[in-house]
Length: 348
Image (cartoon, rainbow, N blue to C red; front, side):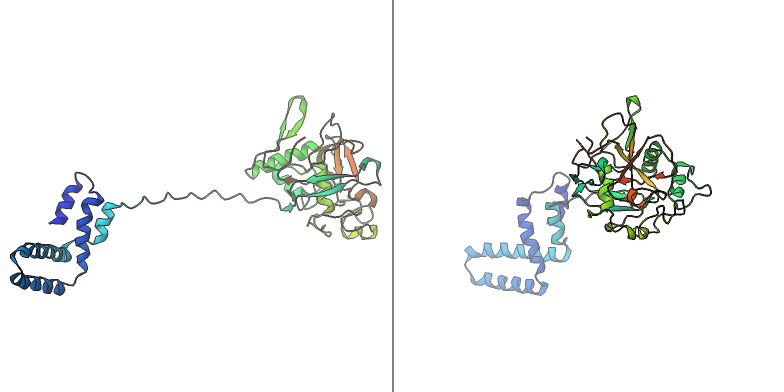
């Protein structure tokens, strides 16, 4: 009956904890075995004959309450049901929607750690003064952009020698072709393109974009040296160059498939030789007033863009880590190619 009253009250308002406290006390008697409850009732009834009349009312009240408890034990709801009315269950947590998986990259990238190094060389006037540079971390393509990859992204293969697109580095591409490739590759992988054209025909790279771009000249030399300060990433010994690079003495006058020579200490291939590599910077005749934070140096009219690394047609000294070349950004020479990077970069 008490259960019935509780359910009737449910239609009006939820019972408070104070109102349900006696019920909870009684329901704890549910755990009494029926034979024990009956025995207690019989004993109390016999005791009523022996006690004064003043105690009879108290005894009878207890017997009545005990009877209610026995009835609840056989037909009532479990204690948990009443407690649930007092303390409703919390709503289930909202399902967490999984983030969309990152698109697989079409290129293999190497994580280049942040660091400090001495950039330049006293061996070349145009690579002086030697200056300390702090380089933020970035990611660099392990291999040069190949003719096959270039055709997949752009739709044509301008490379030489003529023939089907293959794993040789793409060449006969201008600086403008290289940055277009970076933007198209970014779009292909669902990334924000870096390059946009400003008034006057100048192209700038948005440093907040997560897409592909050309390395700065500082990043390129830092990645090429890979922690070394020798002429080449392996040593000063020119006789070892054939193990790491394609150049005039072993190339037979043409570029070769990427990744066939030994890699540098950071796992990058063809940093010396095979084809020159376009970088972001405008060319200056020296490093005077160059920044020390790894950003691109793009002041001036930028009618010349920097090339690094040397090519299959160059002498060994053109392939040194600090050596610098240049060409007009619209030039499409057979000796020039590029690789892309990703990662945070500060603009001057």
